[in-house]
Length: 216
Image (cartoon, rainbow, N blue to C red; front, side, top):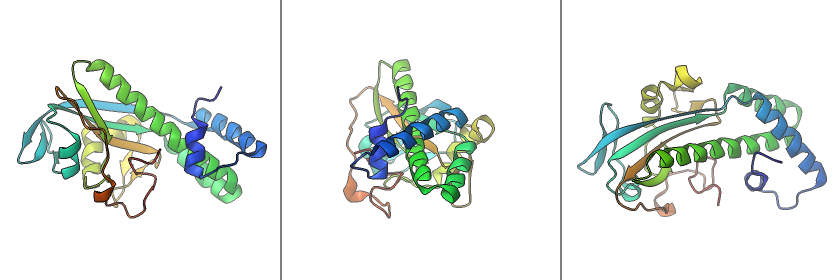
């Protein structure tokens, strides 16, 4: 039985008609991905102060000044910082297939996207299980909407994710390994919104890999 949701991978690939040949490649690529990936999940919870329409994360220099965060985080008193990665070997294998087999590269890349998202969802469930007295917000990442990518190095540094999971941030604030998710997720005593607002999105390409609604 597949560990990774093929239907989501096919959505990434924009595949409507799944041929037996493609299905065989998916099975092969999933087996390879699960063998070489080194998944890591890191999360840390922080008390926060809501001041002047910003969330100040106590004990750090991180301030979330974002209309999107204010809309989606309803007076939370705790925010989790999260980092999930599949490891650098996955990037190297995608690069290898980009030079040797385009179909395998596309399949492998899509499966990796879904796998890291599944890992992130598992982490959210674990955090919710540890905070059953609070309502959990959506997961929101630097680069979504108006939440700046400039927060990426601070988040990685605060979680010590370079040492703990091998994640670094380049000069463009992009993460390496590529199959890495970072996010903020709030917890509060009030019910939390669940919708994203596409009208205010700043992504250059609708439906890109970092779109928070990508799975839909």
